[in-house]
Amino acid sequence: MEFKDYYAVLGVERDATQEEIKRAYRKLARKYHPDVSHEADAEARFKALGEAYEVLKDPEKRAAYDGLGGREGERFEAPPDWDAGFEFSGGGYTHGESADFSDFFETLFGRRGARGGFSGFDAAGGFERGGRAHGHALHGEDHHAKVLIELEDAYQGATRTLSLQRAEFDPQGHLRPRERTLKVRIPKGVKAGQRIRLAGQGGPGANGAAAGDLYLEVEFRPHPRYRVEGRDVAMTLPVAPWEAALGTTLSLPTPGGEVTLKVPAGSRGGRRLRLKGRGIPGTPPGDLYVDLTLVTPPADSEAVAAAYRQLAEASAFDPRADLGGNGS
Image (tube, rainbow, N blue to C red; front, side):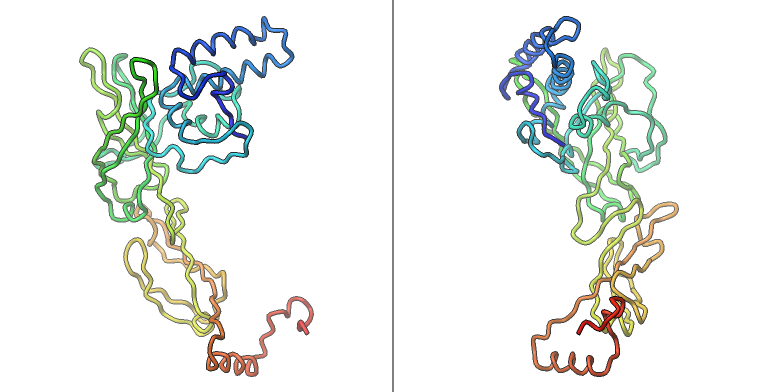
C-alpha cells in the first residue's frame, strides 16, 4: 500500500488553516469535475481530491493522519495501534462512498464509516448488547476511541487512568490538540474488540439535552510473552532436550497466576499443550496454550561436551532419517 500525501493533493501546506483547505478543494474540484473538465485524468483527480478533503476537513481525522508521517508514493503499512488514544465523533462520509476512496483511506478510516450495533461492557462492568437509540435530535453525539490495555487487566479487572486526544480548530482555523484524562474501570473478562461504554462522556447535548456516550474499543498492548487469540492465550515455552525426552513438571507463570504444567515424556519441539480455562475469563473462559520449543545447551565446557559424546555413542537416533540417508 502506498502513502497518500493529502496536503500535496490539495496543494496546501501542512499548517494550512481550515479556510485555506476549503478554498483549495473548491477550486480544484471545479477544475477537475468530470462533467466540465477535459483533462484525461479528471475523474481520478476528482476522486483523489474528495478523499483528501474528507480527511483534512475533519479535525479528528486530520490530527490522526498528521501523526503518521510518510511521503507520497512510499511503501506504507499502518501500525496496528496507529489511532489508539484518538477520540473520534460521528461516523459516515459527508461525500462519496468508501468504494470511491483508496485502500490507504479504507485501511485508516474506512471502518469508521458506519457504527452499527455491537456488544460491549458499560462502565460499571455490565454487559450491554446493541447500539443505543437516540430518541431526541438534540442528543449529544456519541464518541469513539481505541484504547490499549494490559492483558493482565482482562484477567483481574482494573481501574486505569487513560489519556485521550481530541483535535479541534482554533478561531484562526489552525488544528489544535486537546487532551483529557479519564478514570476507567476495565471489567474482568473484556477481550480485544469489545467496547466499554462511558455514559455522558461523549459530545454535549444542545438546549439541555443529555450528552452522548463515549465508547472505548479495547485492544491489548503487545506482550513480550503472550499472544492473544480471542479468549485464548498462547505462549512459547523453552525446554531443555532432557525435559522433553524424559518429561518434567514445571511451575509456570501465567497472566492469571502461577500454574503447574506437566510436560509429557517424549515431547518434541512445536508440541502444543493446553491448559483448559486458563485463558481470558468468560462464559466459557478461554484456554492457555503452551508451545514447546527445544533449546540445546552449548558445549561450552569439557563436562558438557563429554555428555554429548556419550549421548551420541549411546543413541541410535538419526535426525536426518527422513532425508533417506545418514548425512555422511
